[in-house]
Length: 144
Image (tube, rainbow, N blue to C red; front, side, top):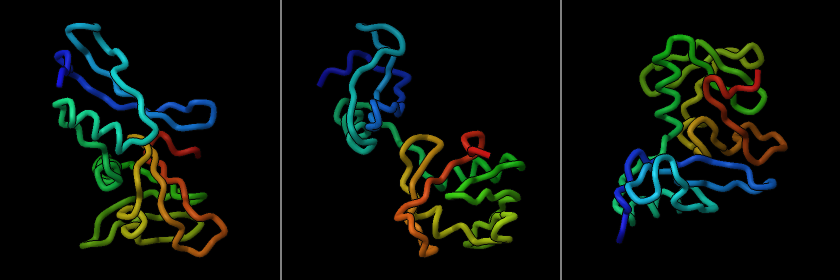
């Protein structure tokens, strides 16, 4: 196992002609700063490669991101076509207000959300709509 002195390791998602791909960047003694070390078709495989090569990197979870938005005081999250603001925690509930749906408990959707990059995730559609999954965006990545 040769890590080439990797430090400041990050995983970034790119769109490869419609196919997602995750690049691992690192500063190294051999190759220089912010160089591509590996490329994978899934975030899980990229994290596993980092662990196999001696770098512990934990991907951001949806709970981490919603907590950041709540702590910011003016946070927002977009789930499908609904934008939720005024986020707060009430016991085991994650509450958010949407002009479309009113006050909603977002805990079930956030807990089932699988992150595809540090600001975007996918969650199963539990409302029974035609979409199988809903896109979840946090903070500044919200589309409106």
